[in-house]
Amino acid sequence: MVLQELEVGEELELNIKWGGLKYELKSKVEIVDADSVLINPYTYGGNTVDFSSSSFRGIVIDVIAKNHNGKRYKWPAVNVSTVKRFGRSYYLINTSDYKKLAKESERRNQDRVKIGLRCVLSIYGDDGMYYGIIKDISQGGVAFIPEMDIAYEGKLIELQFADSVRGHEFQIRFKIRVVRKDMEDGKILYGCRIVEAQRDALAYLYLKTVDSRSKKQSMKE
Image 1 (cartoon, rainbow, N blue to C red):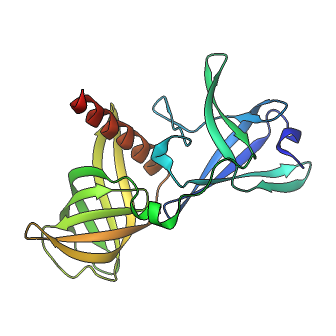
Image 2: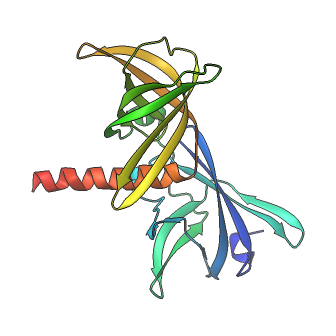
């Protein structure tokens, strides 16, 4: 079965793999063209999250139709771009193989967005609540400076913080695990891998990256 055999109104599932994390989004077929399919986009506060932007380097998106005439179909690693039709935004999906995954070396040097906000840290199996400052976040990792060092290595940690980006309020929660411990400017810095994130983290990281690049561009001008 090819994508173009999908029917308008058919419900889809987007399975997203990015930065070592997995997300699941619901969508619906809106328009079927000769060589592509247009579906409802993921929006946050009126903003369409553009998965084709450089903010999502290395992203892999699978499209699943769970019940097409009683059968389940999956298209792995589709191309997703944001387009405008009739004054509305859509995701245009097709399966031409023009997009390559980032190499491992490129993922290690992925964009990091500076944060500088206070966070709350909870260790699984520990009733205590601790605090720190988030240095930066990337698509699959976060670095923080603890206010008190209590040996976070090897432990599963929940990190929470609040931020406002382009008029949108976010309450972000990550499950993280420490992968390295460094000293920076005389302070302990923990580098962590994000092992679980809620769906809103996609919108947050996208808007935060766009905002950061916009500010850098303004400073150059």
